[in-house]
Length: 319
Image 1: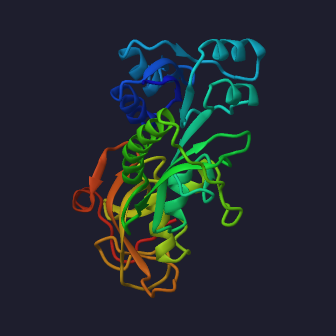
Image 2 (image 1 turned 45 degrees about the vertical axis):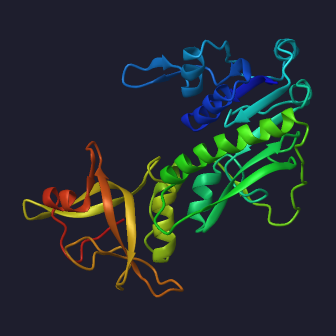
Image 3 (image 1 turned 180 degrees about the horizontal axis):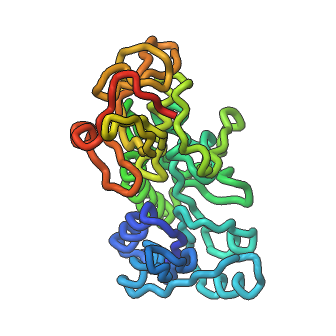
């Protein structure tokens, strides 16, 4: 028996779950997504990745700016869904929406709840130096990611894993987990476990100002900051390069880095290979080395390519 499903999601992260649900033979009667928004140089309105995918599958798409109004809630209820699946949708669901599907609304979340409830769990986990996270399916309630857990699968965060890499792994794992949860709902075998009241943390939205790198922090924190913001929005700094035998500060994003041994005044280069001194940390590893960078207005480059086009001397400053 297939389920009658309303899917609610917006970014690329959500698309594998939508595809997996359709592939399992369930009837997706409608998709909800954020409205098209201006994007690109021409600022033409662009549909979300979920909107695009749903259109290709011939699924009707709704793009309300809010679900608080009675009219929108009546439209949702008229779909007569067995269950609603929510993955990175971007709108809060009022109680009337949560109560409309027969089995309720289930959310695919990218953290080991109750750690990192909220908007940016992938980035915050890496920036905090977490060594593991999880893909989770929870039944939604009126709180912010507070509902009971239906299924979970742990994912290891390696030392150099970026937010982009973790994003992709969680997206695929979450899609598989959600199809398993739907199978359990079909058979009336889904068990729910209340979240612990201990260990609650919140993953607030990444603010633009956070992208600036502070090299006075320990090297481990700088490294985590860089990989937690890679590839977007990208951690950045001002780097002193030598151009026409004169120093010049240029803005650079560090897309990927590695921890290396070294010590010196934080925010200075320790050699002409762009080893950067950071503050002292517990491990004694006091420096990082960028391995992928991007100058403002240019494409991404590996370290060797970057240094061929931008001369960086030992003792160069970063700010």
